[in-house]
Amino acid sequence: MIRKANAAFLMGIPLAVIFSSQLAAAAPSCESLLKLHLPDTSVTSAQIVAEGQFTAPQTPTTGAANFNDVPSFCRVQATLTPSSDSDIKIEVWLPTEAHWNGNLKSVGNGGWAGTIGYPALATALRDGYAGASTDTGHTGGMGSGPSFSVGHPEKLVDFSNRALHVMTVAAKAIVAAYYDKSASRSYYAGCSTGGRQGITAVQRFPNDYDGVLNGDGNFDVTRVQGMQVWTAMISHADQASQIPPEKYPVIHEAVLKQCDVLDGVKDGVLEDPTRCHFDPKVLECTGADGPSCLTPTQVKVVREIYAGPVDEHTGKSLAPGLMPGSELGWAMLSGPKPTALPLAADTFGTLVFHNPQWNYLTFDAARDFAAANASIVGTMMNATDPDLRPYFRHGGKLLMYHGWNDPGISPLISINYYESVVREVGRDASENSIRLFMVPGMNHCRGGDGPDTFDGIGALDKWVQTGKAPERIVASHATKGTVDRTRPLCPYPQVATYNGTGSTDDAANFFCKLP
Image (cartoon, rainbow, N blue to C red; front, side, top):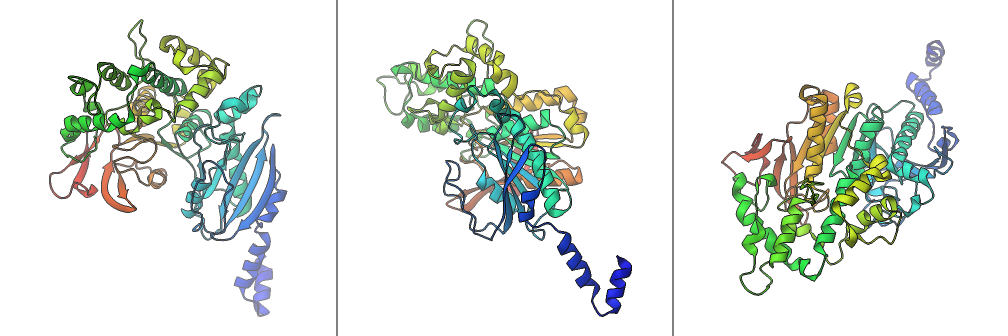
């Protein structure tokens, strides 16, 4: 080749032209990916999407997502069939080589999945990643329930763990074919159900990713959704048990009045709610029921929401409860129409008791937690194995985070799992492989009174590249689009501590230390 190129140069044709034409001839076009042959994979579409011209199919999860600033990319759609009853849809978005950072970022789902994560794919693309997403093998949207799995056990396997894995394998091959080289690093990011997917990947397919960003994960499904059903049940057991949503702010303000200053800063956010030993009895009505007090029955329900379900025969905790500070979000499980309840009730009704008409008000904690653990939910969907040595052995990093104000999944679920990993693999082995960042004031995955916006994938990428674990991650809070507070997130069990000078809304004036 060099001799021919030199000859051409002597004939007056510049080398740059020769090499660029050879590379252009060798580089595959987007459309040529239609002919790509991969096991159990059918590429159904491969086309260039011009800058700002992507329009997402209308799904319950796309909403009003903005795609106007998405750069030009090659959009690949494929169907994966690892079993005879599988129908897994995936999309792989490939930025131009000039815009590509050399890495792959897979994104997770929410609820029961059933859709491609278009907003998350757009974020990956804006950041320079090749992105990949799957509907996990069925359609219907995150709130559609598990009816797709009735009579189709392979589809439940796909949803539980297989779809993300085969998507990852296919996405890596598509990336390599398009760019004529493999991705340098492969990352995963997901929250809620996406958090369960990430933990599952780390446990079952430890070689799939170099780094996993895992938020507010529903990976201990039986405990998480058992707690959700139980909380709804005790909140709606009868008319006296119901707490009007108008009283949630009353409870929240009482919590802040007692505990806000425990972290040294009065800012409407609890840095570490485990230090807050709030007793709702301080709100008990001294006379008739009113909007600013709780009846004795309501006091009892609030106490139980914080404590979580227990076995009434043994007194043993069956799952952790919600944390002080989460009260403004209690409508998810305790409101007149609990928004998170259908997901959990469908799990028990369809997958545990095989009765779509099952009534959550019949929930018996001791009996039904055991039934869930023995069912396919416990054996297939739970992802609680603490032995992550296979993942850590090849340098894999796991960065977990969880909002302290999460009103749907107890933050203690993430803490308990993190601590179980440290116990299992040893503190020295885990020291540079797993980190947990608790997010004060953040609700489920986002939102809340605390700083909830931070570059988790950037921190993870830097960790993977340098081998140095993040010592703090700066998060911000915005009101009407304007940032009004920044704070450091600290690796658990450290907490952000004010240094005593300067604005308490500036992360620079805080340091991380053990409580």
